[in-house]
Image (cartoon, rainbow, N blue to C red; front, side, top):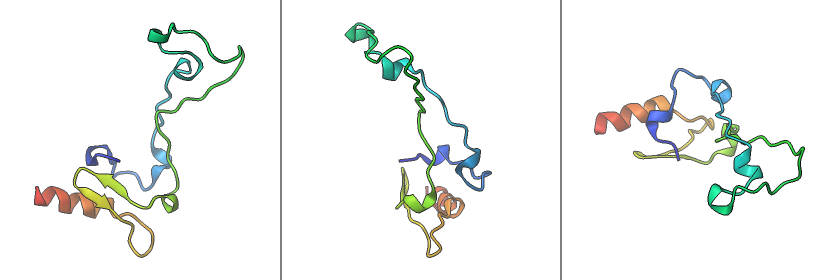
Amino acid sequence: AAPISTVDLSLADGSGIPIEERSATEVTHLPAAGGGKRVVADGIGVWNPAFDVCPSTLIAGIITEHGTVWPNASGEFDMKGFIARATAAA
């Protein structure tokens, strides 16, 4: 799901979206309530992105608070048009 406020219409595709990297300890350690104990061997590398970007060909639809954006016949998502229609109707 993606609130329309998170859509950056200035980008042609997702390659320009910065990916937030979360702390490795979220994966390598128990939560503080669980004692904060390390649960993987020392030296294990972890990449913990908050989200990822995938090719649009792998996306069936984008769920927003205004409904679902479906790809057109060319397989592209008209986010600009969808947002214009959704905000005009609001």
